[in-house]
Image (tube, rainbow, N blue to C red):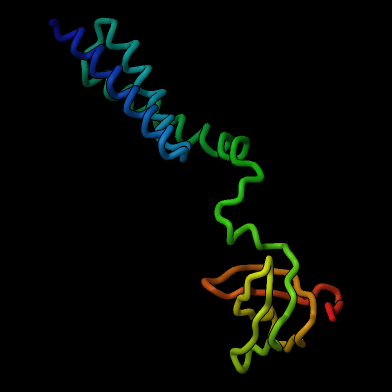
Length: 152
């Protein structure tokens, strides 16, 4: 088997590996290197040396990664919630224990689950008040009153 054929097989293997990794992770990261491997594959069928093939592979991969990935992430991950916890942001919860940031006390219930809760500002929030979840920090909901409504 000639060196040219070995390089063609090499680029096919690199391309296949990048595609498989992308299918497993779905991170829109290795797919760009698969594009670079395709360029390496096509160039390997010509009379271009391996160092030039590798240089083209890296250049195309990084150009795709830097220029196309941000657009693709917006387009394909639009509206996709990163984690279940991130899905709580913007939802309404009910205060089940008075929230007092100064005393580090308070809890709220959302989707049937009890969470420690703190106000976005240092004002206390009374039990029974409906609040909007603005952030999740570890195991705490960061909330603000939802227009002064109470759920009692």
